[in-house]
Figure (tube, rainbow, N blue to C red):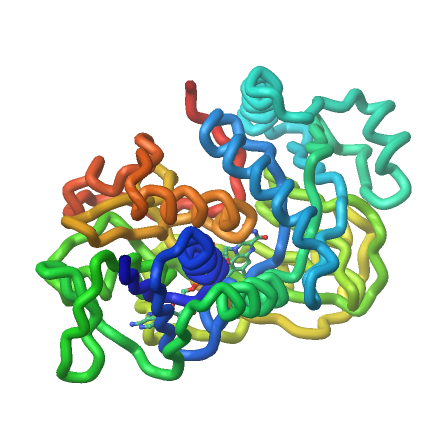
Length: 372
Ligand SMILES: Cc1cc2nc3c(=O)[nH]c(=O)nc-3n(C[C@H](O)[C@H](O)[C@H](O)COP(=O)(O)OP(=O)(O)OC[C@H]3O[C@@H](n4cnc5c(N)ncnc54)[C@H](O)[C@@H]3O)c2cc1C
């Protein structure tokens, strides 16, 4: 079986490796270098704290795979608890946290709501906790450098026989399945598009409409030391974690559709100012900006990914809503399995949408307020 994978981000390199290890003849295309897209700009927060069973299982499998890979090449996975909290006066989010933790625990996740005393005892040295209404901690969590994951997996892919064709944007052909290189159509038995923010555009140029929107988010690193847990303050909409330079923090979501070719790669001043204020409030952290940047994520109408077959032997893997790195090992394994004939993940089937749906972009890091 000859398979083309378009996009050498965390998802594409992993899927290409899985397919090649299973015996397929795989060509991996990227317009730049592996990790060129969002995977090279991500924060590297990893956890299994999802309220939905499918997401939780995929995330838990991914945590395990990150742990196993740790120590290979430059890749390191560092265990680190993930605290998510709501402030006093923010009852709606506080209730959503309690409800989502119930569902996470029901699905077997190691997550607990902390009493004020427990929160103070475990994390009071690093977080300001006086104004916290509800806090929970996911214990099966950690952090990693997404760029080094891609590099390490790219080495694995090469060792498994994947052919890399990088440095040139390609197009998609759906019938028959193929990749458009310059003016030529190269035919494959199957094509997987894992092209991140460009996925919608690639399909649109091939005449297929996907319910997918790229949107811009932001992050920064600070030189000031921080050795506490990873934390998402859901009332302030900011997250932060320890980082080799000191701290990495972010969100700064622009909740509008972005043009994947025309967007500002630098962080906005308002984002740096707001995060600086929030980090002082939440972690008594004085930001000393080392680097501040932006990147693109992809949204879908229901917040779940588009993972599966779109047209005969043409597959998509995108729409991670800011959570694509942490689930990449398992989602890539799932789509590689589907290409080889296994059953796909039903709630993520891309054909659940027509592609012309109107929908608003909501930020990636959020508390899941949906019901089971
Ligand atoms: C600031 C920021 C922080 C984030 N933090 C986290 C986090 O903490 N945890 C988490 O799980 N997720 C996080 N994310 C989201 C995460 O980065 C993405 O969900 C994930 O990297 C998506 O991986 P991917 O392989 O699908 O796409 P990408 O990494 O974007 O890869 C797509 C690839 O396709 C290539 N490509 C595009 N068009 C073409 C074409 N026409 N021809 C050939 N190649 C093409 C691109 O060059 C790119 O290399 C964050 C994102 C940002 C921007």
